[in-house]
Amino acid sequence: MRTGAAVLGIVILGLLLGACRHPTESAPPPPKPSLISQQPLVPVFPPTEEPPVPSRTPSPSRSGSPSPTGFSEAYVSYCNGRPSGDQVIAAVRRFRSNLPSGSGVSVQKAPECAGIWQYTVLNVAESEPLQVITKGDPASLTVVTLGTDPCTVEVRAAAPPALLGTVGC
Image 1: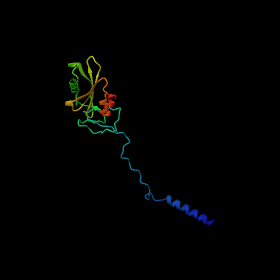
Image 2: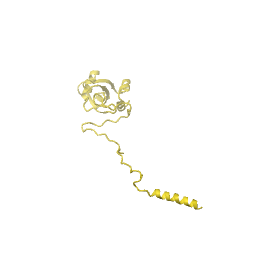
Image 3: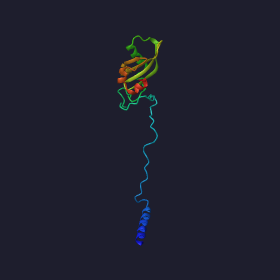
Image 4: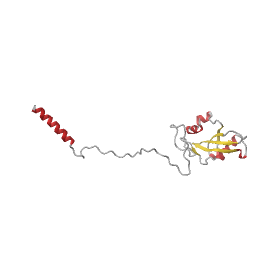
């Protein structure tokens, strides 16, 4: 019986000595502070730029890089005068010559851009608002479609998804 008691004593002594190690001996290092904040990122815009209009259709497949016009296809933002409402009206008059002249056409919703595409809503005298989708350089806009339902086959097939979400296609 003494052999069993001796073995038990040795085991207990080993456990006690193992628990009494010096804190610097093989103690796990304290956790390092995380460099990643748990707060969501908030975009910062220059004071002259409007924040982008949120899209109802996210676009993971499209690039977030700016187009030649400087606007990203990943989101819709105000065009800040590139093009202006007057440039859109001039493009519409070239495309459709039967619009009222003078003050019969005005901008209801300023142009919003996604890549090289723009979406504008115009007030037309004695008519419903005219939704206009254009594309290209502000100095030489091309009217893609205009009317009360701008969701044409061409628009659905080629426009950035962010713009489609804004238009409601």
